[in-house]
Image (cartoon, rainbow, N blue to C red):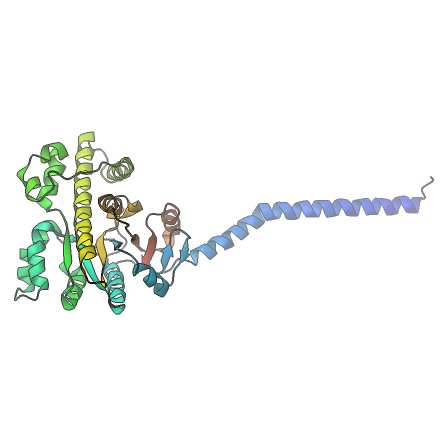
Length: 340
């Protein structure tokens, strides 16, 4: 069929228009998958960042914040609540005080266990809590504060004072420092023959060498103390195992006492340690679970200073599930915690 110039021109315009539509669609698609998606991704990232703020409690299973009232209901159902702190961060003491006061408000009688006290100070701790005439200075000397922990007692004093006021028990969680030093110096095999191991009931304890725990702790030791000999890392690892096993022993014994009692409002047991002792549930929580054959309900709370410049680190912690919950607090007056 003969096509007039007008018809040819019209069809050419139509074809050009279709080409422009296709090109435009392609351009829009490319924009959305490159520069456009970068803007969208940035907006999404900002949205995720908005989830993080001081005093936010984040469920690592969902990555979402949890209201304090709702979270309290969950805590009331636990046998053990693990609170892991950055040492000497007073805001973390405030967080622990919040948990304890909420448990009290629900009519519960929690038991507090603290890493900051050694077993060799338990008698003095009990005496002080009972309301004896022992003054503060005498207490710190009798409980061997400087030998077993050191640093400012004022940071941790509110927890002890609250327990004293409410007539709550406080367990010293840590094996005595001299015992731990023996293991760190000589290794576990040689330390087993030391009389101190028998004195504190650790000679015949099963010190479980969990391969996942071993890999994690050795990685951290080598990162924080580079250049050491293999023997150094091994004995340090074994000293960590003894400490964590000893703390787990303390918690398991106390929980059995709570369970065997007649007070239905007793507990939960609140463990207060450095965050490293609850990370990934490996150091203490997993060892407690091994020791208790009955059903165990426990939850771990990793307290962390919130810094806007470390959002990616927080996201990594949530993704790797460093604990059941991540509790963000203000940075300590002493500044951000050291890396090790």
